[in-house]
Length: 106
Image (cartoon, rainbow, N blue to C red; front, side):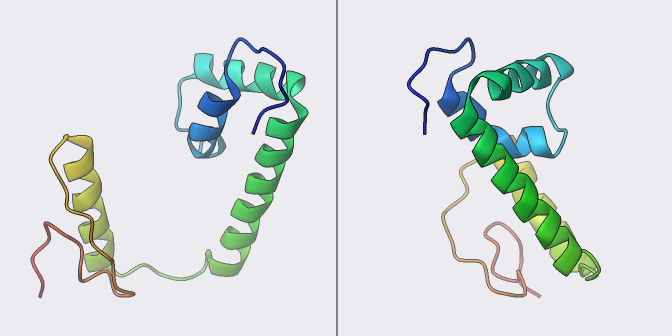
């Protein structure tokens, strides 16, 4: 997606990191770049608005569910593996999360 206009911050970069922006997981300087981009680029602003609405809907509909501690632990373990640069095989995760690669099954 792109409006076809040149921007200081490329549309692809904005869309690749949109959830980091939505979740306030990026440095303030990057947030500022994204805000400037949204002021200049209506397609990216529209995508941002859509993703923000989806996130609010999911929170409203699913935000009350308690996450089992073992599932949270397994997911965080996988995230740590990925962040450390270790190879993590692609694997389908079951509804219970028990099939996460690199995590021993109970």
